[in-house]
Image (cartoon, rainbow, N blue to C red; front, side, top):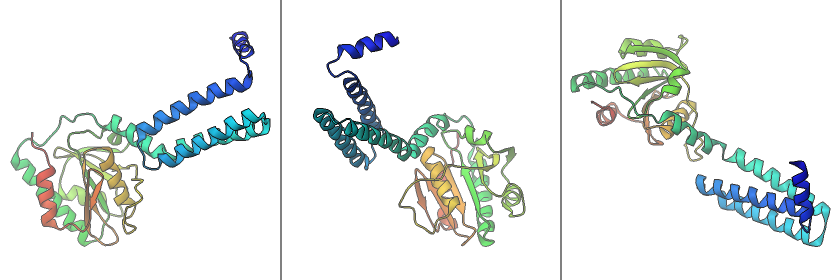
Length: 261
């Protein structure tokens, strides 16, 4: 293999320089594919940086300056690593959607069960909000959250006001994290989500709210958040957060989001 590579280099007019050009063209092509897939608004600036470095490299090769080639090649490699790190949150979201997004097979069985669950969640949200007890309650919809359930404390218990109150009480071991509900059962507690990387989230939203937005970006789940600072209720769905939600509005949202099948 080494002999074949040497023969290949010897057959080129510019030897190792031509080999580097071929390698850079391949890397550039892969990078362009990544940009197209990610479709990030700032990718144009990074693309311009790539093109400038590539132009300087070609100029250095034409002028025959080995130092220029070495510097531009180093800059190209560093920019590639920086690009990967910059887009890492986007890759995580794509990967998380593929893992989390499996169809769920467990839903509420009838309207009576749905109404009972809504009343329980409203009572819990009001109780926690009045006492400024922080909480995250995620309701699974079409897509399962199995990977998150596996990494949390499994319960598989019927949703009750008493259980929710106990879980989120500040002195309990499970209060820090989220509860995931599937159907009318709490599948787990103390689940932790990847926080949203959005730049436009208002500063008054804390880590719980960012986590709730994060899970709504990765799945179709509906999440209720209670702030421990203000006691206000917020909800997230589809990457969007709605703050200062009244109990009446929360009831309407639950009626729309809970699935009976």
